[in-house]
Image 1 (cartoon, rainbow, N blue to C red):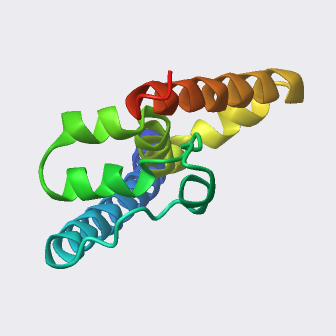
Image 2: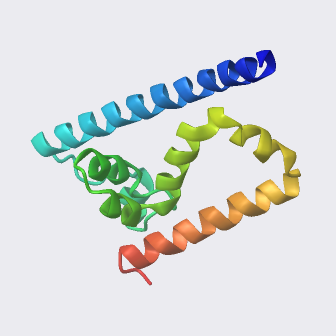
Image 3: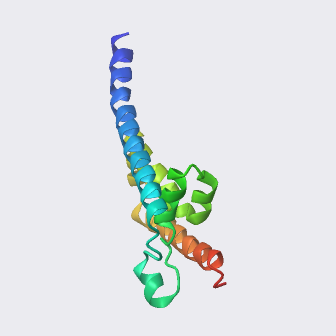
Length: 130
């Protein structure tokens, strides 16, 4: 019974950390959505502002604006990579980092490269370049 209690106590800390991260991200999303409602700054991505081409991370701010406005589907459509990254960041204390490190550097590089390339293609389609 004592081992179970130790395990349950050990689980509370990561769950509490996830809750704090999720609450901080929700507060940030609400703040960004509120600020955007008052003043739309236009294009925030320097790459897109200079080249008129979106980068793989374009729409990252929009993800939080849409989440803060209560539109999760629009947030996902703005940039699935940033959306997934936010979820992974929030859940990392539950042991995702250890699982990620368990994979070799080549596998991690392949996963990240594929995700970034896919996000770049998604943004090109989203902005009508492709």
